[in-house]
Each structure stands twice: as C-alpha cells, then as structure tokens.
Image (cartoon, rainbow, N blue to C red; front, top):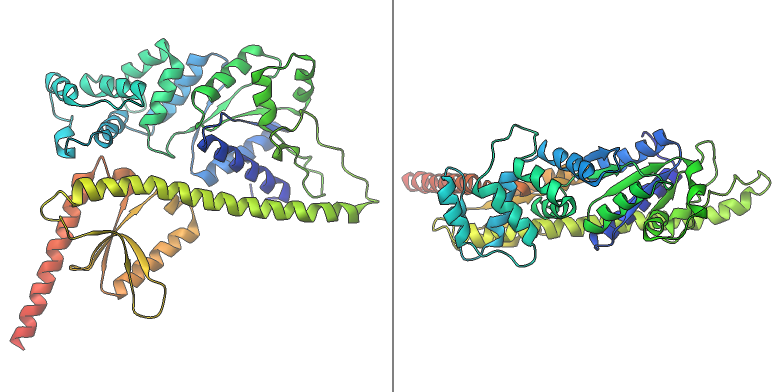
Length: 419
C-alpha cells in the first residue's frame, strides 16, 4: 500500500484486535466499509503482514463457500501428510516410525488405524484422518480429495472445523465473503461460518451506502456480529487524524463524522495525540501477542522432536538439552538455543514461518548464527512445519553433523599427538 496513513495503521491494528479475539475463540467477522478497492488493499496488506493467503467466495451457499476455502488449502498443502502428522502427534503409545502409512496396503492401513486410540476432543478431525489415510483416493495437485468433497456435501461446517484442526496453526487461509446486510441468506452464511470456526479469519467488504440498510430490520445475532466487526475506512481526502469508531466492539452502524472545519485544528490535534498513543500501545501489544503465539506453536514441535526423537534414538539420547543457553564469554547476554549439544558443540534451531516474514527477526537470527559459529558451534536450522512429517530427514542430518564433529575432534587429537 506504500506509505500508510495513521488511519490505515489504526485499521490494521483493529484487524489485529479481531485476530486476537479469534485466537480466544470469539466468533468475529471483520467488516470493512468504504471504497471497495481501498478496502481490498487494506485487507491484502493485513494478510501480507500476517503471513496469510486468502480464499474468496461470492456465493451465499454454505457448501460452495466451504468448498472454495478447502480448494485453497488443497492447492498449497498435502492433506494426507497433514492427517498423518495429526495422528502422530495424537499418539503417545507409539513411536513415529510405527505410524507411517505411506507404502502400506489399504488392509495394512486399516489394521494400523484400528490399533490407534482416537483423541476424545476432536472426533470430526479423527474421522477425516481415517478417510484420508485408510483408503485415500488418487487426486491431482490442487484438487480436493473425494473424501473431503463428500464430507462438504454431508456437513460443510463439520468439515470446516475438522480441516482447521488438521492444519498446523497459522497455515489456514483466511476467507473473504460476499455479504449484504439486506440479504438474510448471506448474513446467515457468514454467521454460521464464524460460529463453527471461530479461529478462522473471515472478512467482507461493504460499500458505505449499505450501512443504512439494516437499521429498519429487527435486531439479530447476524446483525450484532456485523456491527461488532465494523471497520469504517475514512475518506481518503481527509487530512485530519483518524477517527475510527470501529475500535469499540459495540460501535453503532453509523457513518464517520464529517470532516471538521479548519477553524478548530488545535482541538483536533489535542484529541489526535492520545489516540495515536493508543495506536502505538496497540501495535506493541499485537507484536507481543504474535511472539507469544509463535513460541507456543514452536514449543509443540520442539517437545515432539525432543521427547519422541532425540531422547528415544540411541545415537542422540541424552546428548541434547532443550532450550539451553550459551555464554559467549564476552560479557554479552547468553544466547538461548532450541537444542544444544555441548559435547559436540552443535546448535539446532527450529524456525516458525514468522522468522521469514519479519526482516529484523531474520537479521537477528543471522547474527545469532554468526555469534554461535565464532564460539565454535555448528548451527543447523529446520522448519517447524517439517518436524513431524520429515523427522527422519532431520534426524539423519543431525546424525551426519554429529559424525562429522567426532571425526573433526579425532583428527585434532591425532594431529596434536603427532606434534
């Protein structure tokens, strides 16, 4: 969007606030009201900053909308691999190696699945995993598996919830809807989607003239959700400080006040300063919340790699410490490493997708790598999303590094002895 105005920044902060509500399980529909092109640009900017892609649906039909969203997932992800990862993470009595479905016959898959203990919390997701793993259909890249299409036909909202649980946190695309306040069907569709999948980022764009349409209608849950998610885009020609009524959850469905006359700029400036301060505080809170969310997501992968792989495999058992610190000995702050083998001076880091979206975080990671290397450590980095489906490759790489380190140490001892 180029250089953002304070008003745009405020609206992006409001979209962040909606995201935090969804993370808490509160159904939230983001409603951007204003010129459609500008609303789409703002929405795209927020998606880019959040590392999200989006599916779009212009239909009021629930099945068509869920199908469009599921197709967006299938174009980016291998749902069978996601199902296998979900199964591996849900089982404590089995090692990951025992839970490989690839290469097995349908009968072997069926027997394996019958041995597993289904989690009690998500029966719909477990049923979908069974369909995707026991007798999977052959699909082309980007196409929906037959099992998913049939599940959408039977119960689209149940399938929506199941897919959300199946996909790793932060990987589900957002959903852009066509909603009209005067169309009860589109309102019901939006409300049903937000209620069934409260963590899903859902938004719609409305022209300014649509704001007056619901006023004569009887109050409903759908209209209340529309009102609570309202974000009005200011007039681009306005040069005054932003006045965003949507920052309050209960803001009424009314237009923004007209631009104040030029006779009272000092009063406007006095009001704008504390408002901008709240914007800065909001941005800091959003940044802290994102860091907390990412740490929580990574820790799940880290615990799996530590407890299920490194502490179980004979070659790595007892050699790595989880979330250990390295004192560089130069008076600087000790560095925390996800997995540290002091004996062989190996550092293993698990990177979430946020590491590649924030330029400063990327630079900080590179500086950390350099500091560890100067201290004599080899550094290996792996993607958080690869920890479960590609754990064997990760383990093989770690073993290769360990062998190389041992050979290096043996060579140094031999050379030192010859002297």
